[in-house]
Length: 295
Image (cartoon, rainbow, N blue to C red; front, side, top):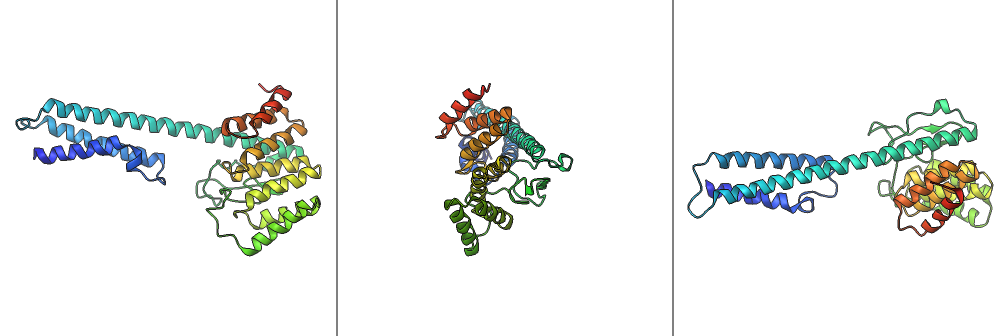
């Protein structure tokens, strides 16, 4: 009985001290980790109670040292649970703050375009997995701008490489190449039109984020600053960790500055420094912050 009990305690110690590297897969959420840690904690508590009711260990095995080991496991579990809760709360705060800031930018851009701000709904939480309300949110149209807040009339949030979407279709590549060719030829009106059509047709494709970014460049060249700002915001929000994310934030700040929204431009420059401390654009962002008198 005691040998089996010792084996169980040793197994619990190995699992508890191994940490998340051996016990969780990458796909598990913080809630899953907390649940597993809570279950393990309950099992250790049960072992502790069982140890306290035994008649005593066999000769040569110190009961006190075994209890100390269980105490150490309990302490480590408490630490892991506390750390997990701390990380969960921190992530929640970051997501809420980013979502609120994007919502505020959408409101201001609609005002600048003369759209109806009363038609704005609730901003979808940044990082949502789908656009069909699976997470309780729904991508909405921005009145007066004709584009969805998630990019191209209801696009799901997707990575720049489009892992969540289907494989790149030949027609999709052809349409993108045609729009890019117009941009390279400095035919900005045609490029803007083609990229607009592209993001409306391929709302969650592997090239959608890049299309938003290049659409913004075309609008910028045409002097359509507010529409460029809208497109840069779409490029960032569809892939907030993508290869273009830092440049999208930087150029969004420039568009907001040109529109007289200095405070919002400072916020975007601050976000760039916070989220991309290793960006090549950080030096230029600091220069713009100093020039604008950002706090």
